[in-house]
Length: 145
Image 1 (cartoon, rainbow, N blue to C red):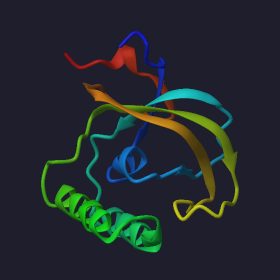
Image 2 (image 1 turned 90 degrees about the vertical axis):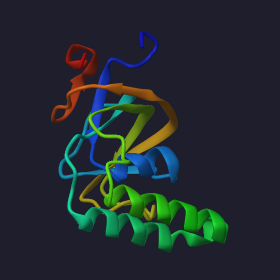
Image 3 (image 1 turned 60 degrees about the horizontal axis):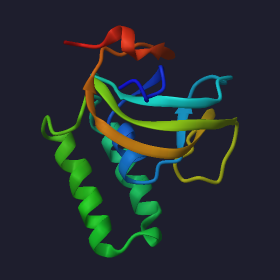
Image 4 (image 1 turned 120 degrees about the vertical axis):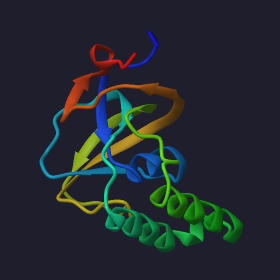
């Protein structure tokens, strides 16, 4: 754990999963975000209604050309099963990434605006249970034992 960045950003499912597993390269936010650098990705404990899962599936459909048919079916099935079960990792650190920019527009199919954090060098990590918070937070102070 010592090698992981101290700061974390909480992201709801299935979006956190999409960052780690489906190439989601933009995290949408309602306001500009000045921080640049390495962060941990925290999967929020909050379980959204079906709209988030439907929106994520729509984006995967839009970028279908980047995946084989078999891979597309696997990814869609994974998101659908998360929505109908407790399979989604929630309430903890699931990966790391670098925030390299904050944009007001982007050609990425993952950008919905009004602002988007551009993520690079995404890497999964073994799940670490952590209580989340709004904005950037020091996750090591919120470890759940």
